[in-house]
Image (cartoon, rainbow, N blue to C red):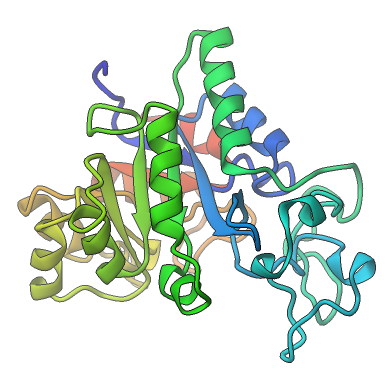
Length: 300
């Protein structure tokens, strides 16, 4: 693998600021914009096929409630795991919306319900990305997330054990391959490295502050961390010690998420936030719904 750019710009759910998240169209646009890595959130279908969805639920990004009104669980939610791949392929994927109000979460993005989009499988997405890498001559990497592995296991499905062989099949095996596997559950990160023998790069995601002890624990198995932006920049715009502490342990830092239309309160603009993160904090990568904005940051 050639020397990678730093900081890396990771397309969060694809170019999700412009097209419905995790659709193949959103990934194609992110690739065309020049994103270094494209993210895949992974959940399982009833027939154990990994599909690319941000949640175990499908009612916030599809028309499942209209097409399968009786297929919700007792809590009223619709789960990908309760549907076969063939059934999921009949759904129209759309811009994320609030299930209670029916309104778009981000009102100025691609219009909800407009267009025809489908839920892709992991393999379909890998084929698209590798095809674009070949046809454009520019190699974008992949950044799959194992979503809620403990929940899947309690439901009788081992998502990590299913996903890793697919990554191997498409040539993602070692730390020299353009692939980061990420997960919010530290026990699963440890399991991926140990029991399941994943030899590629591994990222521990977190929305909570990490103690020095936990950070040291992470460093034993992972190559980096993916913290919430607010764990890197404090409300008063000062830097937390997280990046420095992580770097001291040899960990990369890839925070999430730059959204031009939903900036943290401390940021005056996207450029301001990019300056804080890429310039002052010195993070190694950044997730963005708008990869083009991050790629065009003046200092790059």
